[in-house]
Image (tube, rainbow, N blue to C red; front, side):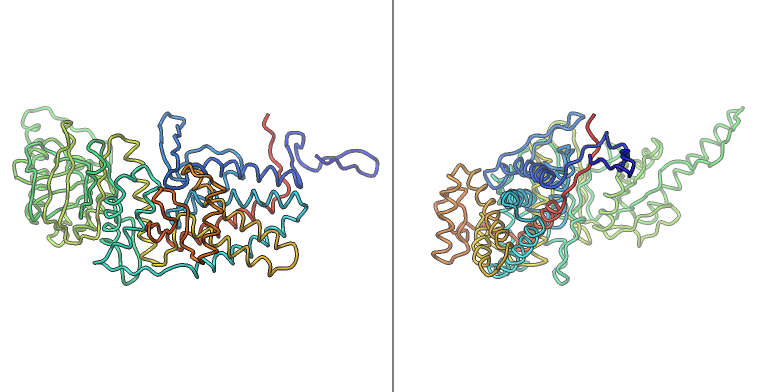
Length: 535
């Protein structure tokens, strides 16, 4: 730490408790920051692309997660370094905004930092590098607009959407049945999409999973699946044209708020008390019957007596249904959530064409399906799989596919995948660098080199010769002036991504470049790191 002296030569303290802090400044600070940013990118680099590896993470309490999704890996990794935390937030913001491309954005940022390090060693000022990167990112952004294609689809022709979702799913564990999962994702999104407003509310799509069965058994249900069973084993298992009362009040006698004591000293008094209680239950059940309900879904529990009465009066019921599920059921069936028995009216009942209880395997696992609803805007994707980790990973993959379908409905431009868009941008940025006098052109060239990191990582993960493959594809793009040539990861035998049907959303790619550049600019501008020391 720097010491300062007053005019009598006595040292005095500038930073409080400075002997307990460590301080890095100037080039050292920038190099340390770049090194920690690159370290995070290096971890994710191997899980990029269809042949990417998976990571296995164990949380402090022993839960194991196996995943290929960049955002999830970084969320679960307990990162301590401040710059590494920036990288975690970078992939999280890509996940929130786009939902896909969370690995690529971190690899891209790592490559930009690597190029910046070389430029810093040549003595170029970090601000000039940041400005050059900014210029280059704008060039790449506009170039992506130029090479993108509009994708026409309609509610009847969903093939284009399915192809794009398949590209997303091909880099996940579930790629062996990516076709069926992509179709499920697209149908789910189209079921809840508002095509006039070009908007999709993903909250209406519920993703449920149950261990057992195989991945191919995953299905899309136009309705809601609730992980509960009927409250009494003898209630009917299937109800057609159900009128559903959705309650948030318990089937129990009301409890006074104050402390109370009841003295019972004769049998008669006990009988009256019991009859009083029974009358309560009777009234409750009768109210539900009078309104015309044929199924009761309740947020709270039932007394045994109420359960018995419901059974006798032939009124099936489901208890302990969570709040979120209640809301979804209300949306799907067009019912209203009723907080008190007094407020039940026939208008507030939801309608469903079929409510059935379905058992799985031999383990008495039952779930209730509510289908053919009045308003089928709420759908459920029901995933089966061999183990819990597989189901969790499938949920994450489906989430990515849903986000891609949503982005295409919002903006139907696509670019070609397989690293072809990055290579094309790299060529464009390299060509534009000559127009800029001054030091910035070095940074712009550095940006062009960094764009090659993604196709390079793709080639490396697919077991190809990275540099050889990349230069071959790049020369092919320049020679044929064809921006669809990418890395042939799946060994199909052609570099043309149009033939391989590998597409990515335009807004996803643009967002990747903008977000990565922003974070790198921020890291480059830090030249002094003061942190509490480790001991």
